[in-house]
Length: 220
Image (cartoon, rainbow, N blue to C red; front, side):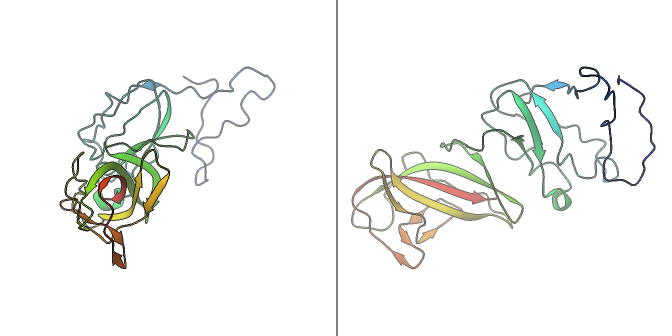
């Protein structure tokens, strides 16, 4: 339904729909764009018609109004969006031309709070590197005080799935509750098993014995 006739009268222009002159003589009539609502915890993409001619961008930039809280659960997506809240979301799928799918896309809040909460679960950040999404995870490691290799990872080692775009963007080592940041990097990091060597890119460093918090930011 529309509050007025829709006519195809301006082909080959930048906009696909112009309602700026609709009912300008009134205050209330025809002023809002009413979106349908959806539950992103249950929403899944229908891909049977996405053949390169229909939906050629594989829904990159699609906007929905979400009404649910929780996480997405779409088997077509490699990474699910956690911490859903009521509001507008857009589907970010910048690699659609390479993947020819929605698999690498994620749902991102539209104009929402830019903050994100990094936990031991994979978190989608607000950073892209060369159009590749940066993700983050928090963990802990135990240092012996005599070796540059941690003796254990109480929350499990943080691994990154191997791919042509997988890599470590940043590793931040700190101790919660102390205000101390020990490093914004490590000497080396093995993405296949999550094993790290403490230090800086130019020199390995033995950390004093203790348990350290760390956040790994990565692409995949």
